[in-house]
Structure formats: structure tokens, C-alpha cells
Image (cartoon, rainbow, N blue to C red; front, side, top):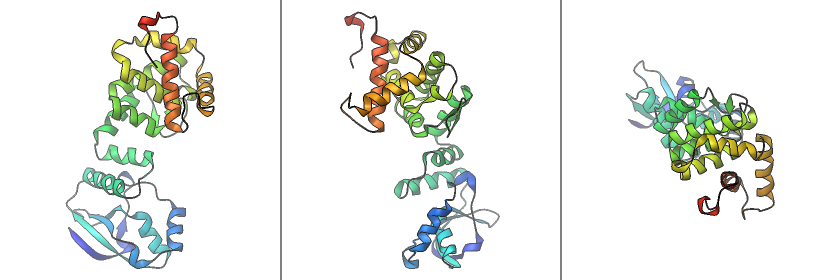
Length: 256
């Protein structure tokens, strides 16, 4: 590794498989107030063919270019594979400016990180993509990853199956608040839950759009003594408990 080596900006490349998407607006804002001495080091990987790819610092590098600078100081790593570049990107960005969840997801896939690979495998099984909400897409990137991270890929698999069994395939089915609450329910109580029965009970409480409206309503009026995304997932979790408990004797109910 070379530390502090000055490199021409024109010699630095970006590999979209191991980087987030460049935000020109962000780069311009950095350029507008740039202090060259405070830019720091651009993390670079020099590949076997001699080409140098930015691992971390592409916005600072672009800002320097916009500000008329021709060179930047770098930290150059040699002999990294593409997977290792992706993992280095994740490490560096967890230490500094965290990337968007969807960028982290794609880079994590490139790096072969199990959290992202396992999530991707389950999504593909359900013929779903991650990043935007649609009939075949889930927009709640962090929410889906959180289910896998906390409870495992099997619980994510069951969560998506129950949601589709209850509501069919529609954008509303993949609402992040509902999926988060359902995933938490299955993660905690899945060993005593019959998924088909759960799907029937969820639908009996209303269609997907009604669930979303109820989650937002309960959260906004402080129904569960909280606010924000976390409380909306908690609200969904407790509503799933209520759906499951309906019609059961008190001794067989799950406590909220």
C-alpha cells in the first residue's frame, strides 16, 4: 500500500459494481466550499492491468475536479480482487459517510457479504427486486435487510410468503412498515405459528391498504407511545399479534 501518493484525477476510474452512484449535486456542494488541505486521502485500488479505481472518495475527487484541481492525494491498495474492493468500500463508509441502503446492498452483493447475498437469494425466490416499490419490487431496503440481519433468511422467506398469501402481489403488499412488523412477529413467535392460518387472519383484518392506513393512524396518534419509523414497525408488529389472537382463548394468545 502507498500512503499519500499524489495522482492525476484523470487517471482515476470508477467501477459501478464496487461504488455508490455519483451524486453531482453533492460533489458540487463540496467543491463550493473546498479546502484542498482538508480533502483527505482518496482510497484507490490499482488493479493488475495498472488501472486505478476509486474505492472511497469519489465525491471528494469529483469536487476537486470541479474546483479546478488536477491531482489528489491517495491511499493506493495493490492486489485487491473486486470482492475485496467492495468490502473495503463498506468498511471505509461505515467509518465515515454511510452510503444509501440500496448502494450498500449492491456493493455488498459484489463483495459476497452474507447478509446481502442471503437477502438477494430470498428475494429472487419470490421473484422480487429491491430498491423501488412495485408489484414485483420492495422499496424498503433497510427494513428487508433488518429482517434478515435480526432473524435470518428463513424468516424473511416466510414474511414474504405470508404477505403474498394474504394480499396477493401488489405494491401495497410489500409495504415496509407491514413487512417489518410481520417479520418481527415471525422472528419472535414463528415456531408456534402456522403461516397459512396467519395469512388468513391478516386478510380478515383488512386488505394491504387498510393495514397501511391503520399502522399510520395508530402511530401518528401515539397509540403505542412512540413516533417514527421504528414505532410504525412496532405498531405493525402489535397489529399482527392482534390479528393472530382474534378468536383465540386468552390462554392461547400472544402477549403484546
